Image 1 (cartoon, each protein chain N blue to C red):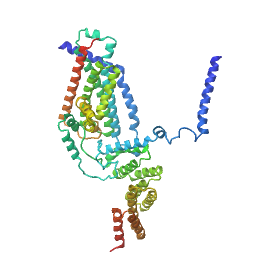
Image 2 (cartoon, rainbow over the protein chains, first blue to last red):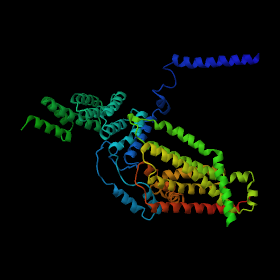
Image 3 (cartoon, chains in turn cyan, blue):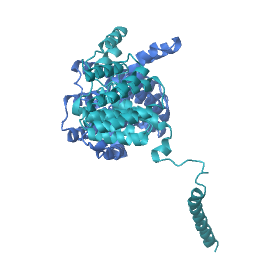
Image 4 (cartoon, chains in turn yellow, green):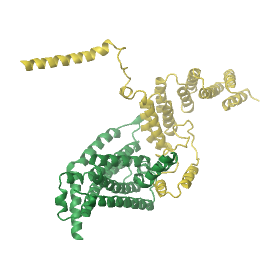
Length: 271
Length: 260
């Protein structure tokens, strides 16, 4: 008898727990102590996702340099200047050699571990994708990672459609980002040769940029104005080009973008 | 001479049998498979041909598991003998203490190297299937230097098993291994940046601690860098042999003075 009683009590308590577990979140949706995250990663990692995403991007940068972490190279994926170059980092190696000339352990280490500087090229860049994918997946706020993915997909692997999709997802998750709109504009202009869509993206970049007021935003505004002026010239819209030049001169009359706009206007108006 | 060789061989066989009887190797193999299998089907941005990330993770697991097996096998050679007092009949055979030490060490080393060979065979097959490059020269160099790593690590752990408790020995050797693999290369840099007492401590560690990072060729293997010179390989092996010999000499002194 007492065993039956215990069993029924156990079952009723279990049922009550399940019911309360379902009913409390439904009844007090806004008053719950924890806010429901967008996915498991958001719930588990919270704000640390951005830091993890940056670490994954650093890993991609390491792969870009053949598995070597170069603190002194400002041409990597984590920097904005992606230009190919043949620069020399040997001076650092020589300095290091001189410093530890009589240290046998350092000498062996420098023979065993890679000291050379190299950059990934062409199709080899597919090896970067897992890390970039993981960095983007980890945090949609990591704009640098989105831009690096776009660079790799478009410029290194020649897949502008995948780069555009990536950017559009990034813009959907970061609707206030002028940088992403600017990159989308460049992508449309350079890879798709679609002036109309590029202009739409550059105008969106300009609108979103007005909200920001730092030096980076000012430079981005100048570059956007240059592209808008260039597109105006392509359309034969001299008044538009002049308008963009005036705006650029207000921001910085001696900047290279302003000078280029001035040159474009002179070319359009003729000798 | 011949009886000593037979004694060493018999003691070594016991250590190898112990590894395979415990099924440690099977456990780490299944664990490695569970970690790696999902990654093999991962296609970021619709591209499925990237392979370096799986190679890197596979090699990391090889290093982790080989260190665990090497430390574990050699750390549990002496303590059970002391606890169950089976060391008495073993020494009364008669077998000298030096012979027991050499036999146990060679057994632990043989067991660790056999596990290492299995791991590298699996890695070579995985990399070959995914990349179409079968066992390049740098692969053999990585295996060669990794074997030297096992020579040092098993000697260290054996010395620790005679001076520390089992858990303290595993913790200390584990920390030393991970610490040297991560920071070994940067110790002089770190020492230079420290104020005076810390600086000398770091320099002392730099000169005395085992430079296990010498044996790590993962970076070259994963990122397809050219092989290193064979002269460097030989120098690294000499370093490993000297370090292991020093550890075993110390262990021999400790074992001789040990009162059961």
